[in-house]
View (cartoon, rainbow, N blue to C red):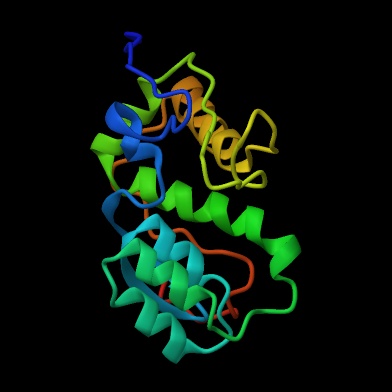
Length: 176
């Protein structure tokens, strides 16, 4: 596989040529939330929808193409009680959908190998990223996991079904 060189902004790595790694990047994602299938216009909206216990709130989040608006809506929803322990697993599902449902994005992600992906930011987010030199970088780690999974196994992401997650009720989908 050819290695691609990128110009990197050390303060905001997921910008410029690497902006496609950010959750704000526009892309169509189909996911099942609370037993219903939704289309989202970016990963941020899909992530925020995972907090919800109310399908009406999910539908409202799915209708917005603005990731900032989706983030604000996510602050006003009825949040599932296990969200703090569930959010990393949900983010991984969101990102798997983002990249497996968008072939060009998957090719771009795998082309970043072996670059360490760090969600550096100026917002102080030390959970999903790294700010002022410290942080857990969960977003970067998840992206590198997905990159490795598809790079090493040569799995063709085109045509994968909508990914399900274990909080969906049995029988909620036609393929169950």
